[in-house]
Every structure is written in structure tokens, then in C-alpha cells.
Amino acid sequence: MTIRAVRGTRDILPEEVGVWHALEDAARGLLARYGYREIRTPLFEETELFARGIGAETDIVAKEMYTFADRDGGSLTLRPEATAGIVRAVIEHNLLNTDPALKVYAVGSMFRRERPQKGRYRQFHQVDVEALGYTAPTIDAETIELALAYLDACGVEQHELVLNSVGDRHCRPAYVQRLREALRDRAPSMCPDCQRRAVTNPLRVLDCKVAEDQATIESLPRITDHLCPECAGHFAEVRRQLELLGIPYRLDHRLVRGLDYYVRTTFEVTSGRLGAQSSVLGGGRYDGLVKDLGGPDAAGIGFAVGLERLASLVPARGGKTRCHVFLMPLMKAALDPALRLQRELRRAGVATMLDPEERSFKSRMKQADKLGARLVAIRGEDEAARGVWTVRDMARSEQEDVPEERILDHLKEKANG
Ligand code: HAM
Figure (cartoon, rainbow, N blue to C red):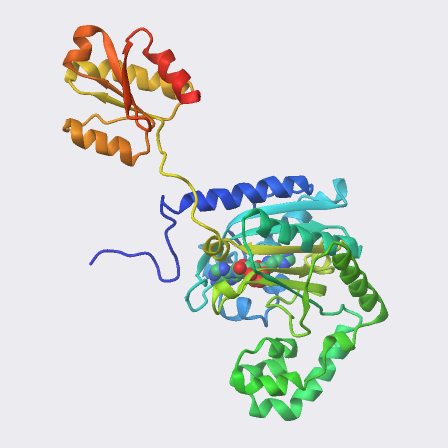
């Protein structure tokens, strides 16, 4: 039996990687313009961090974490998301002391043991963006605008911004209590997940996708009708600024998101082209998380984009060019000058390859074509006798003799020209 990739993981093959580079480059370029710098945190953390940060009653923590015992008896978990680890690092290194308005991003793998399907993997990748220390609604609007600008930069069309406010520590407990009460009579006729959540984490009931439960859920009290004046004012200003910036959105009072740390603004961007897993990015405000994890009382807001989903929305990229110059030493004695030439060309920044195997002229030309080579430099018996290389311009199907003392400069000029 051959060994295959673990279920829910996938290889990103050389043919696809051009898209990934483009998406990552676009993120780095754009984020720098908004004042963000990169942070890299470990792929695994103490399990406790996620339980406290994301919430023990969330699906992510309760069902989906890759948790393992360390040899010394501790419990470690592969990060299911980036926010908790970033906040941990911000606290550990006192980053908010030197930079009270901190903007950081991370790019990398996340791990969740979900049921694999199209657009849902057990190892997936995110660009994760976090702004810490900002309380003003302006940063909510800016963060959302940034998320959309990123999709734009990647060439994603036809998406929808969905927006909600989930209140804060002042108004949400009273709302959750109302929800709990409203669910007391209704939950017994709902799906088993809802029955459980009605007790453990009533907000999660709003996430339920079971068709039979939808009418009941629509009849439940809505968070947006129970916001305190401060949260209502904050949300109104976020909406006003989005309108000012000409950003359309749809309000959805059920957008509570799958992580417990959110307060006030939550948002997602969905695309009909993604199928059942339609959310390409999601985020929101998490004032209180830094303090809960042992840091100062600092606000936070951010989002994460799923790169597998994003990649599936953008056109394939990257031409077939893998080398500029393909060298063809057609006899043994031509190998040494070809190796020297290859080294010099590569040092000069010219992508160069040579085929050291003994193959026919025809199969080498085929290979040069496959690699997208623009120039092929040939050295056989005839060229050696005349002290030249034959240089073929593949696009023009023209060839010329170049004296061996000129060959390096000639190829450099042509390749850069
Ligand atoms: P999230 O909504 O759990 O948020 O994930 C964000 C995005 O990651 C999703 O919209 C989706 O594109 C992608 N994603 C999530 N799970 C999977 C999966 N199993 N397979 C493929 N893609 C997936 C967070 O992770 C928050 N930490 C975002 C955030 C940052 N909020 C504030 N700051």
C-alpha cells in the first residue's frame, strides 16, 4: 500500500503555487500600505490558550482541535486559528507598551478536525490581520475596507459583505438570558445540536443550518434590538463610515461567528461561487480578549482570509517560464564550458538550466519548450570547431552564431532586454 496524504490535508503542487505566491505577495504589499507588520508565532501552543481564548463551548475547541500530550505531561494543541496565539505573543513581549496602536498580520497553516469537504480542510491556510489598541469605530470600517481591498487586489469578484453587532459585556449577557428563556420551550423540538447549545451556549443556536429549525430561529429575539446605547452608537458609526466609503453590505443579525471572543462588530465576506463553505473571510472586534489572556485592557479587531477558498476564486497564474536560458551541451567536451556559463548566468540573475543527460537533440528542444525557455544555447562538434555557440531565440525561431568569448554577455543582454 502506498502512503497517501492524511484526509483533509492537501498538497499545493508546483503548478498551483504561482497563485499562492500572488495571493501572499498581494497581502504583504497591501498590508504594508495600511501600516501592518508581520508576526510569526508557533504552530502549537498550550491547549489552555485556545480553551480560554476561543471559548470552551465553541465547536472549534470542543470538537475540532488537534490536541496531544507532551512528553512532560503538558497538553499542546496545533493552532486552529491565529488570533489567540498573536494575542499571547503581544502580551508576552509587551508589544502594546511600545506600540499602543499595534497592527500585525500572520500568514500560515491552521488545523481543525472538521469533516472534510470542498473548501473545508483539516490543515488550511490563512492570512490573519489584527489591529490592537484601537477602540474607535473608524478602525472597524478601515479593517472591513482593507479586507475588501485585499479581495479586490486578488481579482475576486461578486462577493457580499455581511455585517452584525453582537453587543458587548454590558448588553450581551442580558440578551443571552432572553435567548435562553425563549429557547426553553422551543429547543426540545429543535435539532440535537440546538438542544445542547440552548443550554451551553445559546448564541450558537443562531448558527444552526438545519432547515427545520430555521422558522424557530427567526422567531427568537434579535441581538440588534438589545444593544446598549454605546454598542448601538458604535455600530451606527461603523455603518455610516462604510456608507461614506461606498461599501455595500447586508445586515444579518444571526452573524455571531464561531468564536466566543467577539464583541460589537462582526463581519464575513461570502461568495456564491464557493458552494456550501461560502465564507472566504471572517472577523470582528474582540475587546476584552487581551485582558482575559492576562494582558492590559486593550481593544482588538481583525479578520482572517482562508487561502484555499481565495485561491479557488482567482484565475490560475504564472506562465510556464521556468528558465530564461536553456543550455545544450551536445557532447561531453561541451559540458564544462556549459557548467561555467550556467553558474555565471545564474549569478547575474538569469534563470538558467541545462540538461546533463545524454538525450537526442529533439527531446532536448522539447524540454526547453516545456520549461518556457526564451533562449537556447547549443554547443556541439560543429560549434566547438568554429569557437562559437548557436543561440536560438525560441519565440522568433531565429538563430545566430555567437563567439564563445561573447556568449556570457550576449545571453545576459538578451535575457535582460
Ligand atoms: P474563522 O471564521 O474561523 O475566523 O476563519 C476565517 C476563514 O478561514 C474562513 O472564512 C475560511 O475562509 C477559512 N477557514 C476556516 N476554517 C477552514 C477550513 N476548515 N478549511 C478551509 N478554510 C477554512 C478566524 O479564524 C478568526 N481567527 C478570524 C479573526 C481574526 N477574527 C479576529 N481576528
